[in-house]
Amino acid sequence: MTDQRQGVEALNYSSYLALDEVLTAQRPRSAEHDEMLFIVIHQVYELWFKQLLHELRHLQDKLTAGETTHSLHTLHRALTIFKVVVAQIDVLETMTPRQFTSFRTRLDASSGFQSAQFRLLEAVFGRRDPGVLSYYAEGSAERAALAEQLALPSLYDSFLRYLTEHGYPIPAALVERDVREPARPSTEVQQALLAVYHDDQGPAQVAERLVDLDEGLQEWRYRHVKMVERTIGDKSGTGGSSGAAYLRGTTFTPVFPDLWAVRSQL
Image 1 (cartoon, one colour):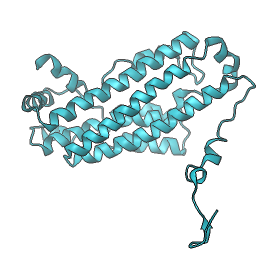
Image 2 (cartoon, one colour; image 1 turned 45 degrees about the vertical axis):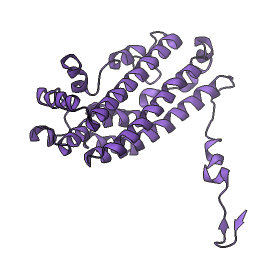
Image 3 (cartoon, one colour; image 1 turned 180 degrees about the vertical axis):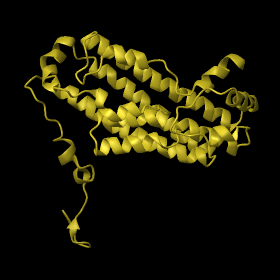
Image 4 (spheres, helix red, strand yellow; image 1 turned 30 degrees about the vertical axis):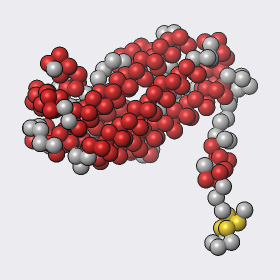
């Protein structure tokens, strides 16, 4: 269909969503029935990771500006996406260990361990591990994007600026800290958070939704490791990782430790 006013092809449902590209992006390497599910699930994960990055960067902008309403709205959306991401594991777990083994060798060295977008998410949440750059080739777009993200403020840093915008006493040394270093638990931040919860206004709601987000990430990690355990047990991962052993080491580690530490003081 042509748009006569502009002399170009008019958009339709398929062209707007680029379905000719999306629906031909599944290229199984075996004739096994279950490989299609494996590919689709992981492609959908990557799409959700892309959207989460989009939302969390927007959230950082709103937090830095001290905006409560927009921050809460964006947090709600991100939390809802996490619920969908976790729920997708139920679909993946319909695949038995034998069904996965039937095509696993065709994956060669590819692994979810190599997901650059998930590494970017970890960096947004505050993980600072320059060693992850070694997983990506020199000069690659993935390595450049991750290096850039590791040098940018984390979600925690944006939250500290949000608190200062609302008049809470966060030490300048923490607000202006070197964001290339991992954030450490702070008694000063915890004291400010106690005041936040005592006031029980918008900032307290933002703090609680950040706890929800932290919990959502931990839930994803837990479900992910249990899915790997039930599918391949303690075998090594296809990308050279230690598989479930590596994933267990990342489970239940909070990204906002100060928000958890104050629970015992409220």
